[in-house]
Image 1 (tube, rainbow, N blue to C red):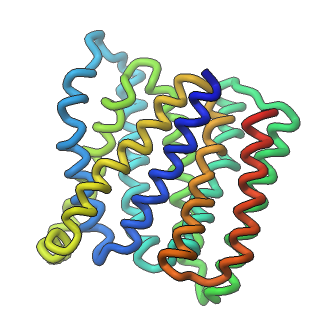
Image 2: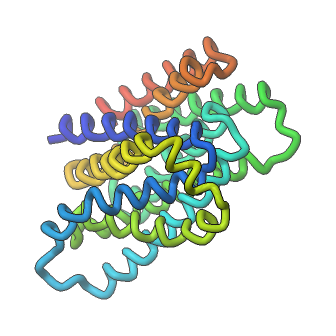
Length: 282
């Protein structure tokens, strides 16, 4: 069962990096993400209707769902903002590297989960590898302000927070229902800025096929992770999902032609080593 969870999480990380690549390459990030959320809402609606829980949802769970919606909504807005000013390899390691540091701490302290000493070593290796990629990015791009890395850090904090809350919600609500709820919330919160941008027609005309694919991949990637959370502790799975950082770095180097390729690949190898340590001995 744990090996199945690992496979689901690694696949989730790969899908996540792909749709983030699509977001970075889009013309208007807010509009692209709005269309992606709309596509996701329509694609997964039939499944959501069939999976809707027959039992009444507790008031505590409704509050947790509301908190999840707010965090996902903040995440999607910050994501649009950070990709408007930063490169994929510049911000992806920072925002994805925050989660492996925070989620195990939250999982252990709030959800009464545990990690072995070797498991904590794996977390440290992962975070160290991601931090080295982030530092290279900072040096190579020469930030004149802290706006970009702080935005990326805020995205990572949102990720860590909603993962823990979503883990709690899954005790009463199916994964697809939770994911569809966040899609609807994201669509709503992006609507004002998307409609005001006047770039919706151009974005749809240029990227309609990628929008449809993103509308499938973005929820599918997170659904795989939610399914995995039912099979293993969040403190172990959340850091493993950050293998997407490796995929994102490779895409930035070979598809977007970003700099510092050899060094970033070396840092990605360190991340992979940490993932193996955490997955096997954590």
